[in-house]
Length: 156
Image (cartoon, rainbow, N blue to C red; front, side):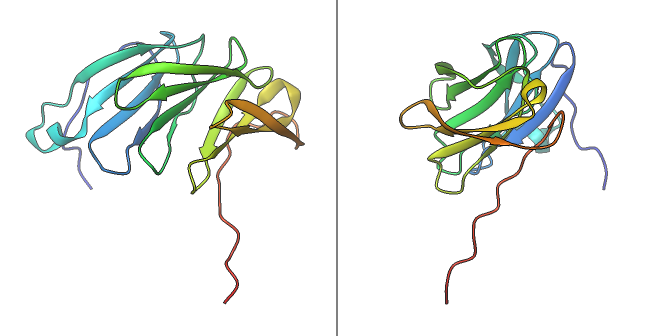
């Protein structure tokens, strides 16, 4: 329960997501239109620092990484879109319009879908990551900020 490393990342680091293989950390930089990538292996050395910075849309909010380690997902409020970052190449491979003030994100456990909250539209977009398209919109309460994914229980 102690701080073991710090990193100077830029303006307004907002949300962090560790990759399932524990190798990298993606951090949204709300004030910089960017996502910082950290080498998680450096935590124990105390020398945690950004190894890459990836440009995205205006006001990137939350961030999630798919369980297959393929993508980092970052909704950006400015364009109201989900930015899909190829984890291996640290580059944006898709910008998928979702809704006004896209903010929260979660990835399904099969890594095929993402769920994005749209603050001003009071809904959650269901995104097919293979087709790179919104396939459904679910109305929810006012100003949804965060979302999580819990798989349905399997039948015994």
